[in-house]
Amino acid sequence: MSIPAQMLAYHVPGKDVDISDLVAQTATVRLPLVKRPETIVIMAGGMGQRMMPLTKDTPKPMLLLNGQPILEHILGQMILQGFHRFVFSIRHLGSKIRDYFGDGSKWGVTIEYIVEPHRLGTAGSLAYLQRTDDLPLIVANADLITDLDYRKVLECHADDVQVTMCTRQAEFQVPYGVVDAEGDQVMKVTEKPTQSVTISAGMYVVSSEFLSFIEKGEHVDMPDLIQRAIVRGANVRSMPIYDRWVDVGRRINYERVQESLGEGAGAP
Image (cartoon, rainbow, N blue to C red; front, side):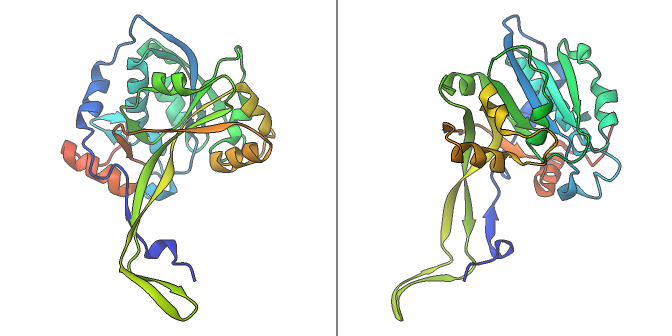
């Protein structure tokens, strides 16, 4: 019998990582002289159910850290690396995101929008992209603050690869003694073992070919879409990352970061 997920004691990646310096950088971000030609798509259309009731009237990407929206901090880190072409996929209270960021000119970048006609999951809106080039795309979630250098991920993405997934390790502890047995013969007992698994870090580089695996209008999450691509013969590779990485879309992480900054919840 498998152990229900809620019974496991998870070590949440990033829960003990200090990102206060990354948050502080956003206030003074400037686009460098060397610009990147690739487009970054940021998935910002989710309901933010893990963050309720904070997200009842505020989209999750607009929750504040150090007086600025989470999404602005994510955007700032990307701008510092020379990226200046962005597409925000929005739905839940999306007008608040659009009203704040506009066309991106405030930051010296270009921001376009995909307004999801209905809930499309974490990948479905990619079918609505209006491509003007054949360059790889970076796709990232709107609740991950990291100092990952996306330029290195692009370097890792080979021409014959359809998806490069950023991955990292996560640990969880089984809250019982685990028994290894052969029939009724007990061979080993391990008390509350910790197990490590490789997880998706929610950041990807995808080729134009990958978009052909999506049916326009369908609801599909990125893990399911990647699995579909693998079944159909796509070349999918992983890139382990060891950079600071905090999922501020988890209430426990968001509140911890707020506490480290000496502030409370709010929205612009």
